[in-house]
Figure 1 (cartoon, rainbow, N blue to C red):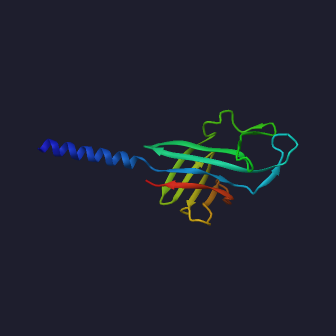
Figure 2: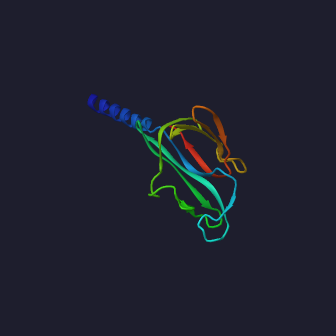
Figure 3: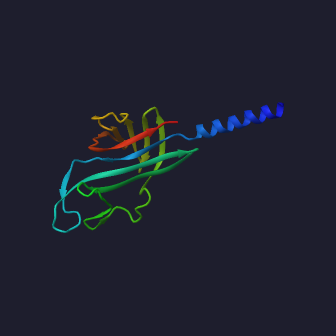
Length: 158
């Protein structure tokens, strides 16, 4: 009987520590510039485009997984454009091209670092008609608010 109780308590503690080790995540996609008109593919047709970023960062134990991927979005077709005007954003479109090195979540606020810039995002909770949240960028010299024009990002806490 005593052994059964000890095994049960140890199992419960291991399960609790596995849950606690998952520090949360931030995931979504946002347009961070106003709509622009640009012939991004050189076909002599002006396209409605916008710069976007996919964010997919999570913690697994003490490890940070994921990062961000920047791209140009064709607003008429919805297509993500990784190569335009003879520029290539990344060679491999299946992985984040800018890995995160830090993620901390407190409530609905996530702080993460990419390329030595720390971003703080506060999730508005997805209320209809509201901005998806606020982004602040801190490069160590200045703090700048990044306006979000479209999209959605969700923060999932511990």
